[in-house]
Image 1: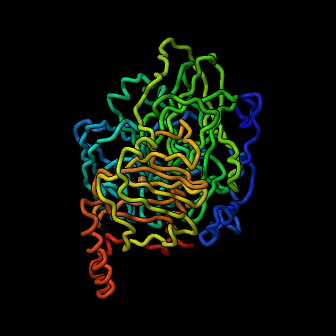
Image 2: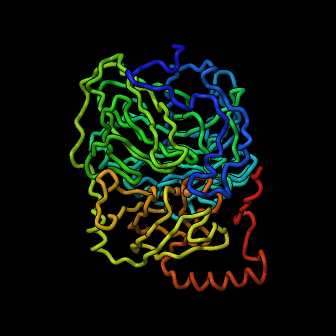
Image 3: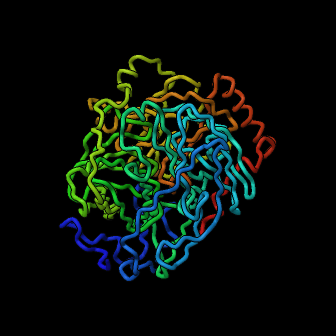
Length: 526
Ligand code: C2O
Ligand code: CU
Ligand code: CU
């Protein structure tokens, strides 16, 4: 097929992303973080006119290989390589065990998994298990640095319910650039309860991972490299690392595990023919019941599982999953085809969706039945939280392990993410939480403000804290992030911290190991 805009659904329009333009500095006005706007490209290198490039529009959606613990644990190896996104043109990319992105790690509740992450790149990386409830020491945040040529050995105890998570590098000041180059992958947790639901679960067949990212290519067809700062918005979508993918599916219910792994773009997914989707899971696991939705809006860091019922389609039919205009968020009006779905055959193997899938507590009832040990306020603004930019040397608060906390977040369209737990949304004043938002979460758009109920069951000591941050990677890299410790007795830690701050002022550098407390915000500025 040579007409990349051929009308498949009867009403498709040419995606704006395919038109030639220079890279916009739109990020500089978006969300008001002009100080870290994407200035380097305001002069605008010429970017690729994708209409002029013979892209194989029939390219099959790549499905990342599964990586499971078959007895030897899990090994990831980060290295540089080349990827040809556009026929014959090599781009420098990074990946875990593959040239771009990484395998889909699949683990099971109750498993204890030895993991090794080896860094063959020439700069420090980390491997953060976004969504996993694991102690700070193995969380993979900015303090779990893996230096070039070194390996990080750890053990993951999988104690949480079935869920769609992901992993990515998380070096402060470099997260956006490293993830852009490819250091990210999906991480699935399975369990017996979810298995019993008989949801579509044949990986790559009717259970399809969709890693959504936007990228920009230069005139020569190579990937534009970015420094990760500001709000990067790419001109075309990559799904599992591929441009314009097609997936062949049976005429039945199919499940998509959708991850927004973009640096900054919000996606709003709809079926091209307007047919409904069913949301079955949020970041932390299954919803209590399937919820019919017209569209699925995902900010960076968020995941959702949806089921698309293709029963009424016939072999040969095509339908497109699209990302439409995200109203109200400047510069996000671009529309993209995400994946073309081609129906290949009928099947009688199509169990109905269960009506009850989980027992997520009602947040208000839970709030009324527990003791809230701390209430905290976080205002996301101007490359900082509560006015403070991330500082490796400053622990922003200390939480008591095993207690409930209420966090009030304000600041607008920032996706707020917390490490080490899943949380529930509390209803806004006089309002309700929509059923599709009432599952366990770990990343949520703040909008007009959100109130979160959470508990931390694992330790994150002073030397291995958890992070909370905006998941627009340019924002987190600019400092819209904080760190907190989770311990048995916050009182002693707070005292120790106070004296630590004093002594580190007195004897500069003494308690700080430069290898561990790595932070270089200037190195990547162009
Ligand atoms: Cu996706 Cu702090 O993480
Ligand atoms: Cu995380
Ligand atoms: Cu932000």
